[in-house]
Structure formats: C-alpha cells, structure tokens
Amino acid sequence: MYRLALNMLFGDRAKLAMLLCGLAFSALLMAQQSSVFFGIMSWTYTPMVNIRAQVWVSDPMVEQVNDAKPLRDTDLGRVRSVDGVAWAAPLHTSFVQARMQDGNFKLITLVGIDADTFAGAPAVLTQGRIEDLRLPDTVIVDEWGASLMGRMGVGPDGKPRNTPLKVGDTFEINDIQARIVGICKVRRAFTGGPFVYTTYDRAKGYTLGARRTLSFMLVEPQKGVTPAELCGRIERDTGLKAWTSDTVIWNWGERSLARNTFWWFWTNTGIPFSFGTAVLLGLFVGIAISGQTFYSFVLENLKYFAAIKAMGAGMGVIARMLFVQAFTAGLIGFGLGAGMAQAIGRVMIEKGMPPFVMFPQILWATFALVLGISFVSAVIGIIKVSRVDAASVFRG
Amino acid sequence: MSHLAHTVAVRATGVDMFFGTPENQVVALKQADFEARRGELIMLVGPSGCGKTTLLSVIAGTLTPQAGTVEVFGQRLDGLGQEALTSFRRKNLGFVFQSFNLIPTLTVIENVMVPLLIQGRPYDEARARSLAIIEKVGLKGREEGRPNALSGGQQQRVAIARALVHEPPLLICDEPTSALDKDTGAHIMQLVRDLSRSPERCVVVVTHDHRIFRFADRIAEMEDGRISRVVDDPKLLDTSHL
Image (cartoon, rainbow over all chains, first blue to last red; front, side, top):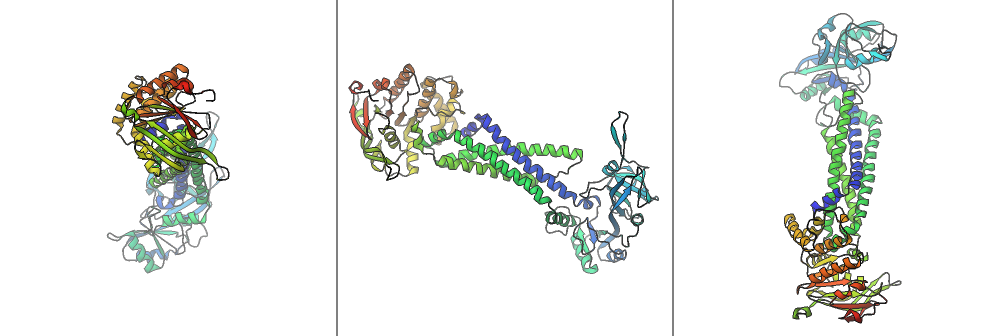
C-alpha cells in the first residue's frame, strides 16, 4: 500500500509542488537563518581563531575575548614561572582609530604580538613577510581590512573604484605612522574593524597614555601537559584566569574562552532572539503551508480513503499511508531547502558576508523540525480520515 | 437455478437502524428482513429515502444496526467490533460504487490492485492477478492509463475489476449504472450478472434504474425502512414511483 500511497502523492503534481514549496521554504529559512546566526556568533570569538595559542591567560574578571581587562606586564613573568609552561608571550588587543591618507578615520582592531616569537601571528600572509614587522613603524593588515581601508577613486571607465591598501602604503594610528609590510588572511570579526598586526612594543606606542597594555598572555604547555591541566595550574598559582583555545562551543567540559564568548553574546545581546524569531517563523510557516496543503490533499482524497476503509483497510494502514506520504514530502522538501541554504551559503561565503556556518547539527535539527512538520501534517490528515465513516461511500 | 442458488448468502432479520438524537430521530430501517441467495443477483429498489443504502451499508458491515441480526455467508456481523468488521470486509466483500471512486492519481492497474494490497498480498502477485482480471473485464491495454482517460463505462469496468480481484463472495453494487448511458449500463450489468453465476458468490445491487431490472434474478422492493415485497419478475413491479 505504501507504494500506492507514494503514487497517490506523486500523481497530484500541483499539490505536491505546493507541499514541497512549503517544506523547502521552511527548511531553507530554518537552516539559512540558523547558519547565519551561528556564523555571526562565530565571529564573536574570531580573535581566538586568528590569534592561535593553546592557552590564553586573562584578568580574572574577563568574561569574553572582546572585553580585555589589561594586566600588569609583571604578570607575564608570573605565568612563565608556572610549572608546565613551555613559553608565554604578551598580546595586546584594542580598538583604535586609524587615520587614512585621505583624512578619513577607520576603527581598527590593533593586535600587538611578541616580536621575538611572533606568537599569535596570522597564519597566512598573501603579501610580505612576518619578519618585516621588526622594521620600524610597520604593520600587517588583513586582506578584507586592506580593502575596507582602501581609497575610493574613479576608475578608467568613470565608475567609482576602491583601491585596496597594499604593501608600502601608510596610515596613522594616534598620529604615529604605520607602514604596511604585509597583507594577511584572517577571519572577520563581530566588531567589524580590520585586524592590524604589529609588535607588542609598538602597539604600546600606538595606544598612547594607556597605563597597562597587556590584554592577554598566550601560553604554550610543555609536552605531556594538557591545556586544561595547565589552565588549572596557572589559575592556582597566579590567581589569573586561564582559558583553552577550543572553539567547539558545545564542548562543555573545556575552559574555552571561545565558548564563554559565544554564550556571553547569547545571553547579553538580542541576537539569539532575533534569529530565533526567524527560525520559529520558518517553523510556523512550514507548519501552516505544509499542514494546510497536506490537509487539502487529504480532503481531496477523502472519498478515496473512505472507499479504501470500506474495502477493509484499517486505520493503521491508512495512518501509515499518510505518514509515508508526509514523511516522503518532508524528506524531499528538506533536501531542496537544505540544498538551497547550502547554495546561498556558498555564495555568501564567496562574497565574504554575511557570515555563514552550517554545522551538521543545524542540518540535523532542521531535518528533525521538517519531519516534525510532516508529522503534524500527517496527524491532521489522520484525524480527518479517522472521522470519515466508511458507510459514507454509499452516499454518492 | 441450481440447488446451490437456494442456499442463503445474506440474511438480515428484524434490523432496526435509527439516526439522529432521540428527540429528533430518523428511522432508516424498521424491522427490516432481507435475504439473498448464493449464485444470484438481487436488486434492492425503492424510492429515495426508503432505506436501501442503509440496508446495503448494514449488509456490508460499514454500519452496525441498533437491533436485529445480520449474517453474511454464515458469519454473524451484529456484535462484531470495528476491527473484526474491517477484517470481514477485507476478505469477503467487493464494492462497486455509484461514482466509481477510482483514485485518479493511480493507474488503472494500481486501482485494481488496492484490495489485494489491503489484504497484504505481495506487490508482484497483486499486479499479476490484477492484469488477469483487467483482461477479463475487457480492458487489456489500458492498464497503465489513468482512470480519467477512460469513458464512464470503462471506469465502471475498472471498478468491477477492483471489486472482484480478490474474489470476494459478496459483491455490493451501489447504483452501478446511474452514471452510464443505457447501452453502457446494459453491458456493465451483463458483466455483473455473468460474474454472479457462481455458487460461491452473491451480488446485491441497489438501483433506481428500472432499465436494468431485467438483469436481476429477484428484486426486493423497499418502502419505509423495510422490504415490502420480493418479486422474481420485474414486470410485476410498479416502477412509477422509483
């Protein structure tokens, strides 16, 4: 009977198309909005991705990576003395204004890294060399930032054209010259500003007047010592807060700064509410369109279901037929919706914005919700068919 | 008629059937008695509202009477639960409906296969048996078409094939010719009559169509919820009020 149930479903192309549209749209909305949400949320801990170290040490009051509370430079020595530390390097992060050559100002994320070890340096440089940061007044700018901070002009075709910054260009930070010696590739951040890397000591110079400039310490554990273990030792011996660099946000067992940052934004901003509303909207739209279409499909076939009942099919068989129809439509609808979400995501990633992170968990959750919609639709149909009297087939 | 034709196939005795609330009760059947024999085609006739369809539903086990007994091929239906009635219909009944009730999104053969698949027969077996019966009703070559592409007569042939594919002892036909022209109706009734000529089968036809009375072995006339008389010769019926 299930094969016939499927043929009944596929035989009504118009209804099927409508049903699939509803389910696909719902799946698309839920998967796409969730992926953009997690994309934006993953931007909140971008420094953890761009600045690589196994252990981060901060002031005990720090709750998330974008809210650095400056430490004393002497804290670095205290951390280095903790048993199990292979090395510890200073890190400065701050938001400062950069003055471009055309007089325009841009807010940047200034990152000061240790000039000896280059711990925390960007992994990929598309132009220049990291060692050139040791030259006076030098910085490395990220690719997207170079474009953002570029100069607007008029191209040969008369149309406006942005000329990105390149190696050799200069700008000013607090009236101190910054000369670009490299362009790097890093992930964009929630705060939006371009990443400008320099040495830790030079960053101190760029942030005039700041009494403390040590935002974090990047620490490498010795062989045989796990990051989590080292975090415990640092906290016990120094009273500072130590974090692992794990970026799996649902890894509850870890002392992850990324995870803390994620959940800080989750609880302290309206982002989850906004995107959650969109996801719920997708769910309700799915239930409304698919439920209604499936119900109308059942209504249209009601007399045939009554005839099947009269011929001796029990409600169990009919219920299973309706479930097969609803879940098949759900599967196809999910495939179409998730496929479209993937395609949109691919385009978004290629264009660089907005962020898009489709975890497998998002797909599984969307799949479960679409099947939930199918289940609700099938149950509505089953209730309707169960109320039909088999004797009604004789009433013309 | 053979001696088997006198064996009772369907017997309803003292059947009462009411609809509505006690204050606003509609009497559909009142002490109705009905009998159909093996190997015969019996027609139930009477004016609209006389209880023909209700009696047919009671015999078919889709309605349970408030009083009386119903026996079909030796099986008492009164007192059976819904599940048992459903199982009984699955094994023993074939239906031909007034409006065919062929599922338009399925092909002819898929429609015919439905009763066998309901019985849980394997798909291939159901297909093979359906092909054979489709050929028997003269629709070979139309198996893969949709019912809507067929004429009314052809659709009713499909419905008959569907009603008989699982070889049920009792064939219930509800106004089988009402949607057909005279000649097509006669062809269909000839087919039904031929199919009834088995000692293991009985055909009960509800109809208003006096043009097909000649195909009946007997005709039971209903009036006010009961059988008023049974005749062997249609000429004996006054058809003016039907």
